[in-house]
Image 1: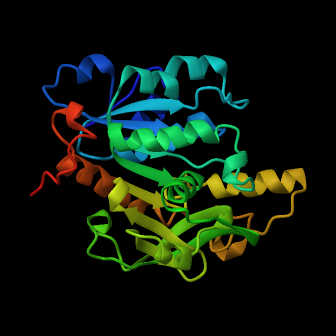
Image 2: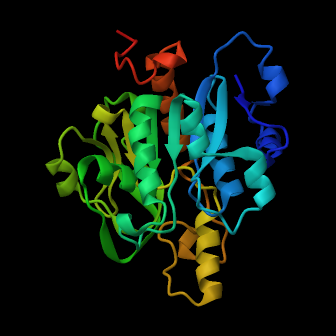
Image 3: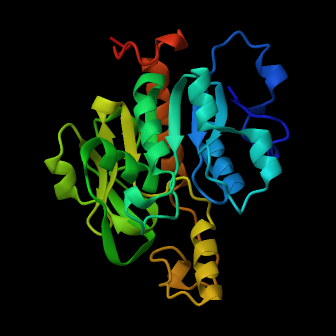
Length: 314
């Protein structure tokens, strides 16, 4: 089954050209299927790049997915046109006011990790989003800073500044191979990392009800399950394109910002060579498994979301 996107959204043509099955609204409405309603709260400045990355992953599922793009109500982006935001994004205040419910919600990262959470300009609204997910979203997936913010809000787990940026492709180990989210995973995998902060395993272990599914001796915990809040938190970037780390590296070099060559990314650690993507298959596995779990456990009657936490597989 395809992912349902507006035909004028830039991701539509990009994904169609890549072979991802995409479908416009009129064609989707002819199918007698309840699509999974997935929201993407996009906090990244490069909105179009980010929405395409996540649409690619959730569009590879055999399930029909309807993607809704959401933004913070008052926060305005300077890097994406106002016309694009007006055409394709709903402010969270509108989503909350209309009582919309979602089978799944992805909350992206944001380049503000140097700030204490409480100093982020939209922190108050974001905490309202977190609370809203408990009554209006069946499963939430927090990514990088978004995952750090969620685990801090719900469990008080602190983030810690790193002495140098964790930057590159780090090998990670699966620590809970029986997890349905890791179905089909190898014992270890490579995941792109790009952050100045970290969550520490000792802090996660001290919290109640959290389970680390993937971690790295070098990069720390990566994927954490929070069953009590029907959430997953991932602190690294399976969604990255092959050249995303290269774009970040080239940008910092051009601006004169001190930056190390991303480790284990370029062949021979030579930035003049074309990087190879060694995480794509596991990225599709993870997001495909997440969607499968959402499909297996979400109520068919979407109005029941938030009212009944029963696992519908039993």
